[in-house]
Length: 170
Ligand code: MG
Picture 1: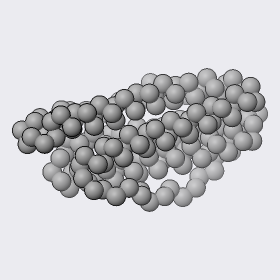
Picture 2: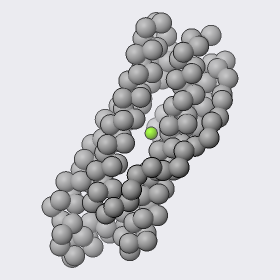
Picture 3: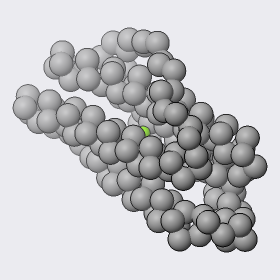
Picture 4: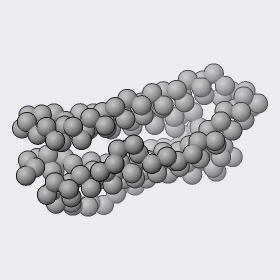
């Protein structure tokens, strides 16, 4: 049986991942609205990935006797100020999600829940990639965002991103 606090945190993480999907869908809509369909595509796929994350936490709970409790998903609370500002918000949000994953890991570690720690290992690595992706986007925008031709090419590059299912299968 899973520890009660670990179950609570895993349930909260389901909600956080769905919130992430909602937030990134909001980002995506902003970019489409601004004519930056490549950025819109990139964040739409990012939203799909976050839904996948939520489902992985859900399935892990189900596979290990933890009861799934779904809560309301909050309204995205980021002001969509500019194409560039959103990218910084994206990085900030991923850093926050990393802290959440680490908190669950810490709770599992404290009760010697090695199974949950092993499950979370994938997410620890994934968060490193998510932060790196968000940081790379910021750097590219800083380099190319002010020049229309370069921005067009960057937008085209991001438009080529295709959805891939997560490598973790439960
Ligand atoms: Mg996630």
